[in-house]
Image (cartoon, rainbow, N blue to C red):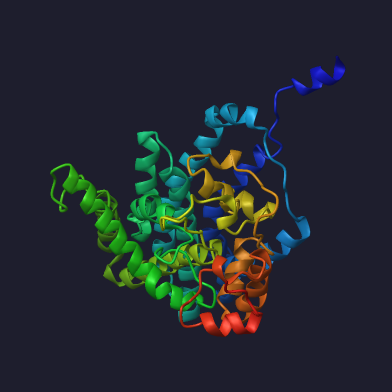
Length: 387
């Protein structure tokens, strides 16, 4: 009787309060300026960048991984709990305030070029977090969450993301046709050249097709690519009128770096993984093993479990607090912050990931999405099976 009673106890989310940690992320845009105003030394503006790309990966290694899952019986309760949604809602205005503050700071204080660069990279990192929030909200059904997704994507001009991601990437993921799935042997810089324009063209084509089916023109306020772009225009013009048009290069540079954070995430999430085709030439449904996964505790707190990407692609509507770990998945050796740093050095990335990919697919070239120009070289290097 005691055992049965214990099984009936309500599920308690041990990470419930840890999710509040994510709301500290926007505040990092103020860390460097605060240290600068205190010390007068522009080099301290690089502190948030050092933290993100060097300290967080070390913390991830020290804290390790969390492979615990909520029981399926608890998922409806977790999804219905407004506490988790309110955290993502609260992040939206905080993102806007962080972006506006950074623009004001750069326009107000006479910084050396390396100080401005540090603020650009910090603000771009925060903008990448905007896209992460937009990713979480944009997959949900409630109207308010979809509009909040557009709003949080607007500061860095990446409002087309929800259209491209939900209706494009999630359909074609882990296939050669997907501009947002990286290929084995492809550097992040080569990937960027097809991923960034591919996102825009695919989003516009998808939205044009949707509007056409409704008998509406592409250039319409119903266009979900145009809607967030108008928000972007209003914000950028307001900042320029307030702070002067000399702030525009900062806004553009920070937005570009922000958007490159999404490119970085896309690059590491599906590197070289390939869905199989059936006898009719149709791709199999996306499964958890078609995404690289990471259970590193610390960085997952910051990015709303985005690193449990395998479950996300298998179940896109599942909320962040309910995403699960699965056994026998392709696993990244660090969290996203550490893997971004590795990806920026292609030789290091290939050294870390190519053998890991080969081992996961059992040396079967038919299960790898190759960069076409590198295919034969990689098959020979790793002695892959081709038939």
